[in-house]
Image 1 (cartoon, rainbow, N blue to C red):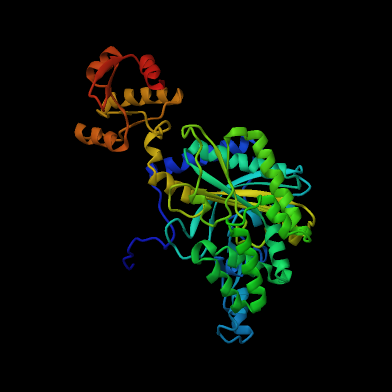
Image 2 (cartoon, rainbow, N blue to C red; image 1 turned 30 degrees about the vertical axis):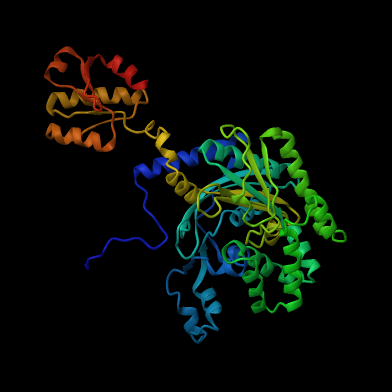
Length: 489
């Protein structure tokens, strides 16, 4: 057998015990908040049929799907049809050799789940899901090919109170994690109105959304000019630029609502989107009162221009209505969200939105839903950068005590005591062999175990245990009942 150099595929990572404790801490907070708001857990398979996944994420998203080769002789169909292997035939060849793919996100599998189980669930259905997803993306800081998503969705209700609750969930989770964030929001209906004003048909809406979604990376001019390659006319592109520049122009002295009402005076989609945004903002304001900080600027860099409240120690919900927030996925139809960590260079750490007919492609039309997702990988990286884990007790569920192994009768008695600790739900272990003391204590030190317990000849005779605090070196004799009480504290 040839020697294999151990390595990982790019964009994937191993997680050791220390990293997993931190990740599980994040998962635990997110899960607890989801359940507080009435969301129930589900899970779906890692793989889905390609027909389930394809065509739901836009042209660029389809390119990032991980496809799974059919089992057996997957080249049989290509040979039988004498298909030439060429770039022109790539899509056809792919469909013949692969019928399944790893899930790209949790939302499309959820829509499929809802349709398949529609007679078993109660609507509106509030579910959360914490599972990995896979994307054949170019790995870079904060972007991986395998990563976890933590989603919460409500399906079967078009009430905007759902959007309000999702904003509150974002706020509570990030507050508990100790992260200062800005929650950005917009409506796809407003973006649709912008396209209608520029005489752009609905069939080209996805291209415009993709271009706007690139504003932060390449700037509005470059992003919109790229539409020339998509066969947009110069008049359409110019009209888009003028409309968007009007929205972003902070020099025009006008209330935001008035600015939009003037722009969308004859456009129902724009006015509806504006009404929904104002409703959400008003409800949040009523709930939060002075705890709401509105970042009203339309400037793309507005998230960097945060007007902090007088008391920086008190918590504030920071909302930013961003008229050019787009979200690249094709299935969004209404309100959209994105969360940015303040004072840290990182992409979005959360996002989501309203989808009005996602279940329709699976045969259940007119079922509206809305959901959000937490970007756990980026949240983890931000918390590491800010050293937020340093002040969190991550050892509560790790081994509290190590029994030193002296072999023979002492080993047997130590094992009996060990099981008594475990029966009292105290995590503990025994070194598996009678090794030198230095090795056993070194094992406890490396694992961060705070106590070492000795059961030697004297302890056997007196039915006691010698407990040593490894950090201070202090040690004392106890009865087993006293050890249990000590370690439970």
